[in-house]
Length: 252
Image (cartoon, rainbow, N blue to C red; front, top):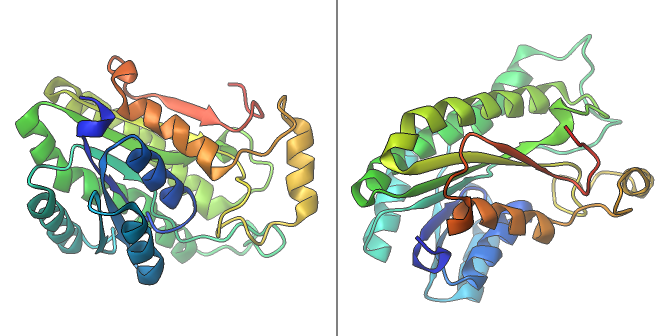
């Protein structure tokens, strides 16, 4: 299925990577659901910017009934099942100086990240997969991180949750593959700049840029274009994979 024929749900779609993904899919002609939890004004503004091919819908992805209701509203609005999901929802601030250290981080901090990142992705996949099966086509793209390969800053809670999401990516791909649904991950490093990375000092951005072959910190727009690949016909034989998009910083 071409991107222009897809109905795409982007969780956490009002800001940062999510908003860049929404704009990228809209640019290619897709109909897009901009999911939001707290950023209602930004989500409504983004949907208005795109026009009739976008709708903003609120749901906390950690709340399964709310996710189910959102998916049903989206399908009623667009007249068909959600075919493509970008699991991007995140509640985190990347500030190495303020991070919780291993000696005193509490389980609750990890649990909070698992709730949004892993439970949220699971809820969305479970709510959308039946509709995908009715048309014999589905694309799930989970947003990951290069930090579990290169923990240059040890964000213990965030990184553990994203590592678990990679495992879910691979196990879900095995279950959903026979139904024509692929499940992949796109993993970034530090992006310049999102709300989540706004607290990062310029010196850190410059240091990372100097470590990449491109001498450049990846932007949300560049990252979003890689997400499009996994929704496109060119990736039809690819599933259970993790594509690192960070300017070549991590190469394994």
